[in-house]
Length: 296
Image 1 (tube, rainbow, N blue to C red):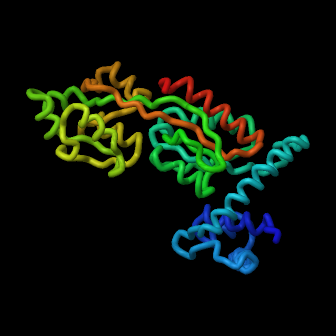
Image 2 (image 1 turned 60 degrees about the horizontal axis):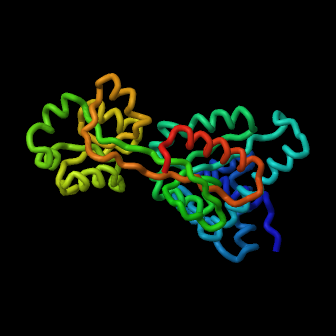
C-alpha cells in the first residue's frame, strides 16, 4: 500500500483549517474534490481519518497521516534547498510548533523572526500550558514544542532550554490595601490572579507560605499579556516571569511580595528527523532560550 502525498496533505489541510470548505480554499480546489480525496484515502486504508465535527478532528489514523504529511513537506523543503532551488521560487513551508503562553509573550518570537528571514518558512503556533504541549508532539500536531517534560516523547529528541523564573508581585496600592498585618491571614483573604484553572503557580507559592491554596478568591485571565496587565491594574497579586515584570519592578509599578521564587524548567523537544530546517529551528530557539532563561 502506498499513501499519496496529495491525499495526506489534504487531511492535514482539513484539520488545520477546521472545515472542508476552508481546506478547499487553501488547496485551490473545490470542496467536492477535498471530500473525494478524503473518501478515497479512507477507502484505501479501510478506516476513518476524520471526525466530521465542527471543527473537524483527526482520528488516530488521521493523526498518523497528518504526521506523514508534515514530514513529507519538511523533507521536500530540505531537498529543494539542497538542490539549490531559489527560495523565491518555493512555497513557504508551514512549521507547526507548540509553546506555553509566558514563553510566547516574553522570548519565543525573537528566534522565529530571525528564522523567517533566513528560511522560506511560516510558523503555525499552538499555545498551551508547558505541561501539555508534549501531547501535541505525540499526536503529530506539531513538529517541535517548548515543554516542561524532560523525558523525550516517543520519536523525539530533547534539549534543555532553561528555567522560567517567577516571582510573586503586586502593585504598591494593592499591598497597602490587602497585605498589611498578619501575612498568612492576609494572603488567605487577598484576591489573586490565575491564568486558568490548570494554573498551579500561585497554589505552589501559597503552599510555601503556609497558606491553604484553595482559600483566596481568584480572577481568571487566560492570556499572558492581559494576565500581567490585570496584576498591574491591581486586580490581584500573581507570579509573573521576571522577564515580564523586571522593568515594572524597577519603575516601582510592581513590588515583590517576597517568598521563594518558582522556577519552571523548560525543554525543547522536536521530531527526531534528519532535517537541516528542523535543526536550524532548534539551534536558534535553544541558543536564545539558554541566553535569556535561568539555568535549570
